[in-house]
Length: 399
Image 1 (cartoon, one colour):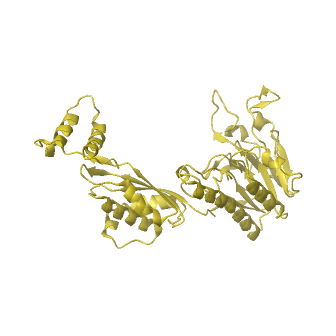
Image 2: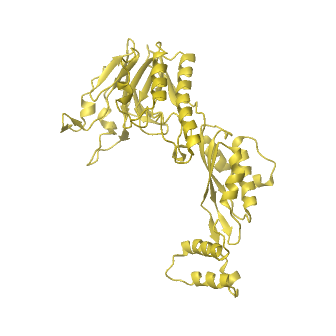
Image 3: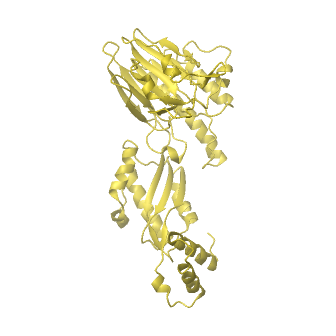
């Protein structure tokens, strides 16, 4: 039997942290389109069930377009069984919009619900809550009330943060993994963490976060998608793979611009590194100044994917620059923006100050640099930043 495990779609997210209103609206529709592509994949690969482990939506106010599209897509695929477990962002508003839920949509509550998907494949789930009837639940209550059979292939759906040890102030969304050991769990289908993660639960089972279906911010770089499972109902052997169907990927790319004297030099260095990541290296000699191992590490984090024009990119400038090196981030963004759907440039460079070269400088600039150098109340690591800012003000450059 083939099953898809997804989570944290966060449909109807605002997405305005980086994007203007037009592009944010466009991205919201693209996220919804990614859900529909997941269904196309499911049909093509004869998937029997789709597990949604929480945070299908981002806010209580689900738009009519999104609600109708999701409900309509479920109704439109009666051959697939959908299991929807609400996460900390989800509410009942989506489900309450429907006069009658589709027969192929199964939901969960704050008590365990179990569904027999086939002869011996069982889907269990519980929406975590810290209280029951107004009273705090006993320690480990969620796991203690879970009753599974050894002869079944047991999939358990939960939404929360896994922990290995219990703290003094456990929150409802914490999943204490040792509580679930020895419960005949084969696969713990989790949601809440936005990157793919998996681990061994016990000698029998594993836990897995599929990550968000598509990244929404630069804290979600790397590969994203859903987990495709193929379970042998006789032997209970299962294979899993992550399938990435993202419309766009997000990248954070550090570029060392040490020794560059002009903004154009820095742009050329950035373009050379981007060309390597796209798989079409430029003939520019700047290629020789790029850390190939760093490029490989970034590409490996995406499962071997390549940089594409449709992607969203954050360039982080690193390294040391001379005090008089020109660095205009606005010009740099203007030159790089046409290459991708969205480009952000951040500056993490440091200025190198050769104090000896200003020892006999009688200008106002020289006097200022020496005064900062000799100020014992200032930390050495911030002096270059103060000097850079001061020099730019002296020159009337506020860019």
